[in-house]
Length: 430
Image 1: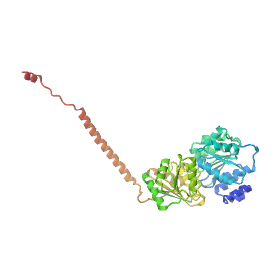
Image 2 (image 1 turned 180 degrees about the horizontal axis):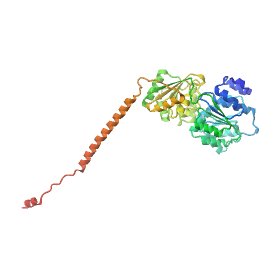
Image 3 (image 1 turned 120 degrees about the vertical axis):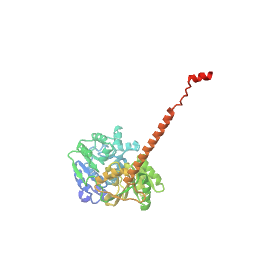
Image 4 (image 1 turned 60 degrees about the horizontal axis):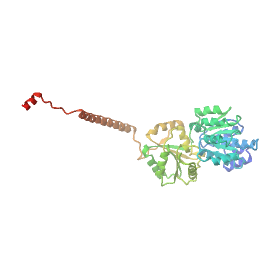
């Protein structure tokens, strides 16, 4: 199905053409028409399938079909909630492209930056408000914005918002909107908690599944390199030198690991993106990576969602994520829009259980590549080594116990006094 068959407003269709959109993706085909008719929707689709257009385009068309009743109102008509600052920025940019020829104002508010600039924009009047839950609550408390005029609510990356503990904030915010609102809930996965949330917030909703639950794109090749944890940096350096990756996104579990890898890669164009990096620095790092000024971008889970990097071929999991679902989100940065992608994971012995969970989730065994010089010690050898160390430890403990006992006996042994009989003393006096 093509976009031109939707009979959209001329200026909206013009923007879609300018964006290069022609053929709809499966999620767009299933969601746009019912969403345009005002239907509440629960949509489950993997990352990189065009979810933003699936909810933004029908909402933009409805805003044009139903202009504001009160032209003096400056409060938002659309509220889009998202879990991270990066995704809020990405949505603002993408939806801004769709609305580039429309008389609509869009703003994204999120933490990590001063509230003053956001406050001024909110009070000047907006149509579409994109926000992280915590920051918009702060603005509401300071009376910078009211949600009483909100007619459309979108919960993007709902599963992630639940994982991050935003559910109470989300429910509090929705109570401030109109009871007649249209609500669209989009999620990469359908967990029991997401299903429960949909029944609480949606009214007589339509459920859409654009693909099989919790699967990765067919365009992504998966491989794992078994490697000892202490050798992961050396392995990455070896692969980077051999394949000379033009652009590679690397995920680490902690910011300390990210910084260690950055220091090791100081001779390469490299940047990090994690919680200790300021919002401005993270924004510049992402922009430089997208423009190919940076060869390696090292990120923690904070960047796993919402990054849209055209043509990204390689994603490396320096460490496997704690949750198997996060593997899907991480590698969703590559293999997008039908392009070929490569997901490369370094797996230590301690991460084998996580790997099993990931393989069960995606429904396939991942190819293993044993790199000469980086082999992992075999399990039996490892068990023998540990057992040997334990035996040696017990032996040393026993030996030390004997030594301590001997020392104790030595300390407790007092010199015997020589008793002289009284008769002997008397003889000596005579």
